[in-house]
Length: 381
Image (cartoon, rainbow, N blue to C red; front, side, top):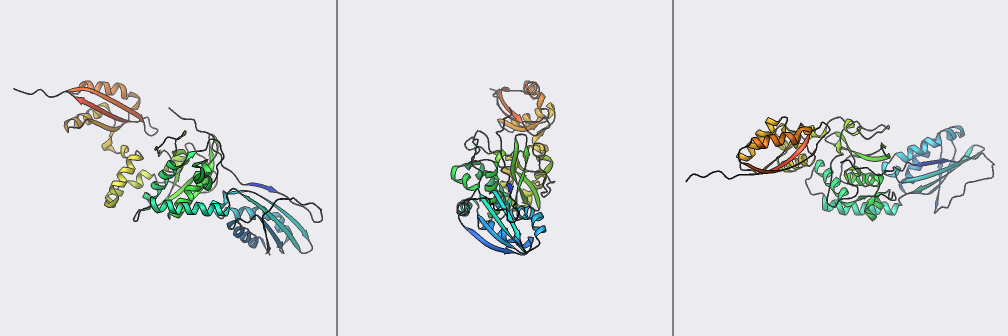
């Protein structure tokens, strides 16, 4: 049964442009905590100064701009946007900005006011808590595949989706244990970055509206990671899903869209994992568990039955080995019930059985979990 997803809102930076001609005698009033007085001779210097101010969470900047006034008027909006976008984490905690330009003689006065969703002190607290968590979560010798799974699982288990749409930052996610997609993505960005895993924040849309998720790089390849959509709604204690774990562009575009330029993701993660266990025996158990968690294990021929004859053969083999059940992918999912009943009637000594199955992939296949009881063999006197 499909579950309706609640609206996931991505906060896009609001840009209100306030321009006043010299001598207009009016100015937008905004409450400020402190202001910085700066100088810039061109847009490049202006961008660098704004970028530095953003890192300090400065709220009001005053510039004496000595460069070309026309260039300033035409380029300031893009310059501010570029400064904000330099750091992805900062870009998603800037709530809004306002600027004004007053020009006379050979110079211009620029006032830039910024509002943030997360203070510098709150970001520092995020960093402190992440350092503590990673100290427990990341063990010496873990590679990036292990780190990504550990962080993904921790976030899913630690957070629940904020259906009230109130918590948009990593700080509020850690403080309340709840967040919208932006909070999930920012926390994942911070944790993965701190663990040394290359990561991006992606903004796009889904059927319910604007949405945010991550891209991570493993062994040189990029993959989509949507931690929000891997967390059940309503929250299920102890449950982690992997429906949106390290997916390609093609896989992700089935229900996610984006228009900005991001690193391409083409190699299926299932292919990247193939052979990892034999190449790295010390982590073979981890890769085997990961493939099972991601259902990749069931894509392999030895765990797949394409016909009822193969299904019967797998069950008979399990029974002959003294097993009391099988788990495999059955390609004819729509016919499973009828096929299974017919197969079980053909197997000698079959006393009873219980079967559970669920869709796996999008090709009509199902994952079958079958347990059975056999009649005792007749003993000769």
